[in-house]
Amino acid sequence: MTLTDPAPAAPIAPAAGRVTDRRSARAFVDTHVVPRADAYDREGRVPEDLLSQVAEAGLWAPFLPPGSGGIGMDMVTLGEVHEEVGRGCSSLRSLLTVHTMVAWTVQRWGTAAQRDRWTPALGSGAVLGAFCLSEPGAGSDTAGITTTAVESGGGWVLNGVKTWTTGGQRADLFLVFARTAASIGAFLVGRDAPGVRVRPIDDMLGTRASMLAEISFEDVELGPDALLGPSGFTAGMVLTGTLDLGRYSVAAGSLGILQACLEASSAYAAHRRVGGSPLRDLPLIQAKLSDMVTDARAARLLLAEAGRLKDAGDSATLMATWIAKYFASTAAVRHAAEAVQIHGANGCSPDFPVARLYRDAKVMEIIEGSNEIQRITIAGQAEREKTPCP
Amino acid sequence: MSVTAIDQILAFVRERYPQAEIDASQDIFALGFVNSLFAMELVMFVEKTFEVTIPNEELRIDNFRTADTMATLVARLAPDAAAA
View 1: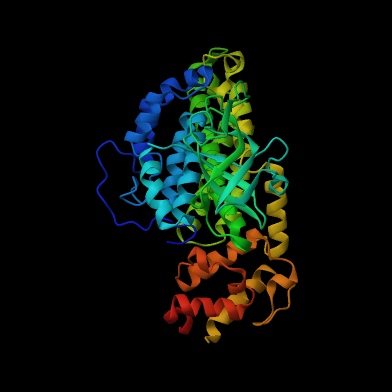
View 2 (view 1 turned 45 degrees about the horizontal axis):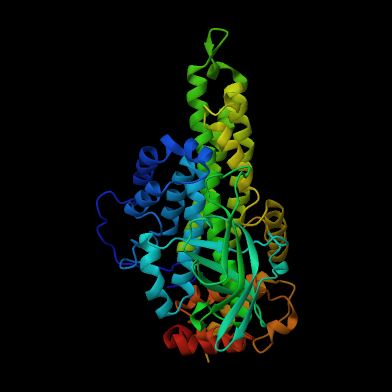
């Protein structure tokens, strides 16, 4: 096992109905997600029956090894699967993203006892995970974290407030980042631990069904086995690695939004007529569609490169993932706006998916590191390496 | 001690920080440019290059202070890789 390859698994024959690749993911999403995604958005939650179907399809953590509910899926394929889910519903993809981050982190950094305790349940979806980093006063600025974990009696006492926690309304297990005496540590905290309070956050701009919550921790007593990963100078690696994988998933989800915009716009332009001709015959509409096609392909290549580097355990995946997320999320916003424009007033109505796609796309530019942070980091890395054009 | 492993580690650090002038015994943390990002890159590089898995208990700062100490860690985890 390496940092980016947590699951060197022997091939197994997947169960019938299980999602194993892009094709099966697309079929699952078209059957179970696309027809109801707008309803989830309006209702502000992903229903339990869909969460169960996701579990039956083995979608929660397919990268885990066999025996832990996974099939050892490689990162390139995982990106393709998350793209397909994002094409159908960004809220569901967001739930997958944070669950992926928790499951991967336990698998990569957990002790044997922590892995034995949590990964089978995370792999099957019996336990859903959520990622708690942002605070009311600190989002992308992780240096501003004020939640504390103080050693006490061989364990820890956790105090603080986390917000914008995707899936927080539903999750069973929180991966909480808190300041310790030495660094920032990662802690596994059960939802039912005394002192944990969950306050739903509703009516957000986008990913409205992702069941966001504010999570408060008041004198939450944790055992020594709550701390995940190394302490000391490498503790930040847990956060870096977890965010990297989340960013990869968000890049994939952004690409999924872009692909959905393309498919919706192409279908609409083929049927909608103006001046006696299909909308698609207009050069300005063709220009918009051709730009969507081009950017979707470019984003897909960037994502695949990041995935291949992850599978190879190559540290260059960090920058590749920043670039993929930055490109895919900005392209999603750009083209979601054009998709609404192509649909005209229909695009502003609840009868077509592009309004949801437009709102969801904007969120992608903010989560897992705002795009401003991404650009600062990309520029800084290029300057550091002095090799902007490898 | 394998000169090859040390050279590979030094080459990686110098590639990331061309302006840094370091040798095998120099404490890279004392130079002030190591952050959690570079620490992760460093660990990934060592794991990939020498085909080792670094357990949590070995992720101690003293193992990563210099190219010498990193090569010693590699030798401990995978003697064949360090000697290659």
